[in-house]
Length: 248
Image (cartoon, rainbow, N blue to C red; front, side):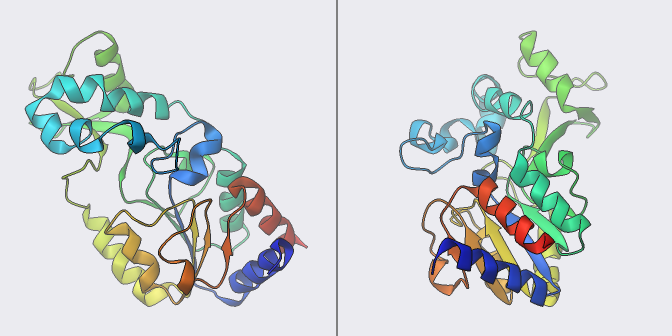
């Protein structure tokens, strides 16, 4: 099937399935300068062992290692800007096509691009909280303390350690994820996966719960065979072409 035919088929799936949801992964944010994790030769996890620096166990047992390694990556991600792919998905929601957007990303770029019905199942970088009194802080406060070499950053109220509001390796999934499972089973006729390798569980199970699915991703996934359409082209351009087709 040629590229134009795939765009046309994808547009047809969106028009003919009222329960249209999108699941995004790191691939949608690479055009914003956010590195992905598993692309051959460039993936972040090819250079860094995530368990060695980015796990909840490291945060608690060696907070200096966590804040000098994993957290520095978080701080860089927090300064990224949305790209045309994020804005296209926001536009599809405004047009009434897209019912909801699930993202594995912590960069917050979908919300900054204007998407409203968003589930950030791995958390976000807008805030952090105290492990003692649970007081919340803007993420910038954690960055500020780390820049001043106050490692780990601490709560002004009870002086316990602060942590970012993200799901680290070893953390349980938030309760909203299990509510989302039920919603996808009952309400999702068609799921479009964008920029995800679909290897991080339990989020990778969500497309299996949908009625139909399609994938836009640079690399093959284990779900390609069950997908209605698979497009391995530039993500932002593909989404722009899809929007143009739906707008005609």
